[in-house]
Image 1 (spheres, rainbow, N blue to C red):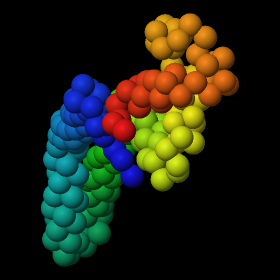
Image 2 (cartoon, rainbow, N blue to C red):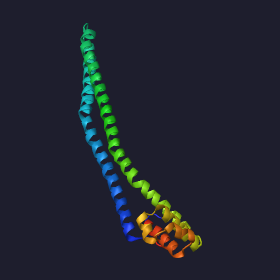
Image 3 (cartoon, rainbow, N blue to C red):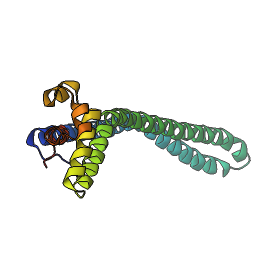
Length: 201
């Protein structure tokens, strides 16, 4: 499989496009990680809320147990502390819920930040690169054929895909010359197709 062209100009253009595409991808992936860290930091107050709720619950349970030991009135005396302990559990649950919400939001936004630019660059850069690689591979397979047949097929591809101006510079009637088997025109058309792909004979 051939990934890059033989001719320096086309090779430099391909390398530049590949480097820019990879740099674009790396930039947005890094931005997504940075955004995730920044948004995840918003969950710190919720961690404090969870810890405060757990601490309140623990202290109120201890106070309720101590109050329950008071003779005669211990059971009624422990009720307010148990109620405050339940409030602490609610605070802790709210802190956990907020943390989960922030984590989900951070993950979703970070994925969008990375995936959308990635899809954009892959849609613009990848299809032409794959097409070129396939055409270069087909051209390399033509080299295994007899030289005359390979030249005629390359010339035919030039007639199908090369710009009209470039064809006109080869011959005033390139199709007619190809049909009649004009060897000089066929060779020039084949060379034009190879130049168009950035390949050498």
